[in-house]
Image 1 (cartoon, rainbow, N blue to C red):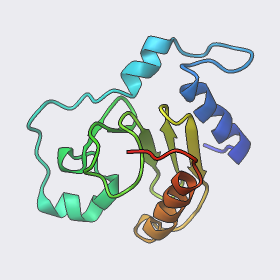
Image 2 (cartoon, rainbow, N blue to C red):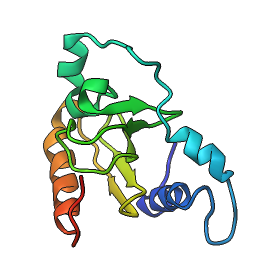
Image 3 (cartoon, rainbow, N blue to C red):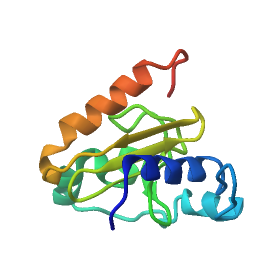
Length: 140
């Protein structure tokens, strides 16, 4: 897939606005809600190795996250090392491109980077911390 940062932002804005762009509705609002809702059953387990390898990316209950239909989803406050509201959803690609959408704060973050996934954590975390520090109100 080939795209631009502007296209990626437009896609994220469509999701933030419940499936509609300024001109067109692409998804029904209930579809977007379903995509960004936790679909993992209670009690699902992850190995310690998986939690260690994935760190803040893992959609694990111990990190206050689950997984929807295409995105990791924050399900609880106070467990994740990164700032964000309950309901924030995101995805990080294998080459480092990442985005998140925080519907409560009406905030979108996009990082277009091409480095091995293991090397993206400092950049991904810095972007998230800086974005939330720039908000006037505190978040969870």
